[in-house]
Length: 320
Image (cartoon, rainbow, N blue to C red; front, side, top):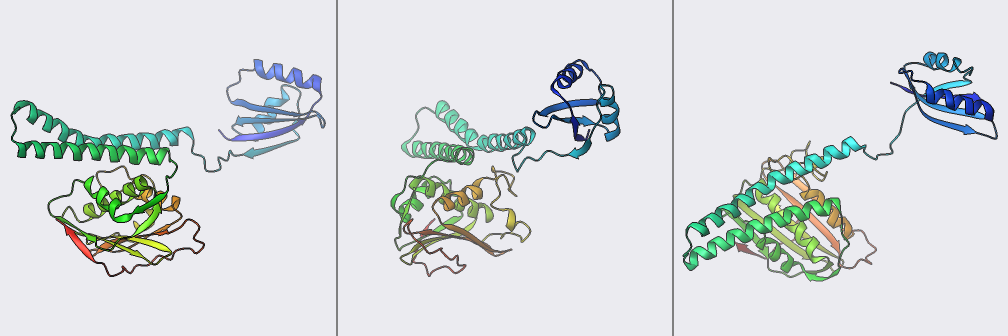
């Protein structure tokens, strides 16, 4: 039913009588939600749910009240989602996380079963089994951290770090397909950043690149340093991002994949912005995508970084 606000002139005695009558009234087609009284002006304002203005006038005539004015009103939330929207988001996020955890949990289950049935494993077999376990556990840890960072952002621990070291650490946590080659920079770049946050961001970008190429192809990681800004680029030769999808890629829970929480790129953007940097993406359908991240060498940097689609000429080594 529509909601209205009406106005009456009323003294204190009439107000008490009115409250008693409203409390006793069981009429179903009018619902009095709130009552406000301005004692200085002796004005009573009622917020009601009703079918029409006339039904309100008829309702109040029973109490001997005459409405001075009646206006339809609408509740405004100022962008705060209602409980149903919150529950919907939580439910969708939980469903995606549960779906994504099934794969690494299945790997762990299979490895444990192999080790139980074949208790005397050769050293080569043990290395393979332990490797699969570590990758599956790292994947679960990464997915959980991704969700936690989204729902409960943590403070940064800023230190001077070697970006090359963070990249290597991120790659160790990825189950890299055999047909993927990751080309690493040979030049070294330092930046003031949170090691863990940057590791999460780079892991997300590399996983995104691998998935864009259907687990087969080359990923180039390029670093440059102009003294004011450290620049990181992750370049793939995948399917590219369609123009109609491009504006949505950093939105939380948005994904075009069958797997994933839809938080990866949203998390990357949040991490970059926490470091007072910018993230830029350029893409060509059928040719590939480049993510460019620029971070101030110092948080005191006054100049804003300018995103560029051009990669600096990389000196690269390959991981096969």
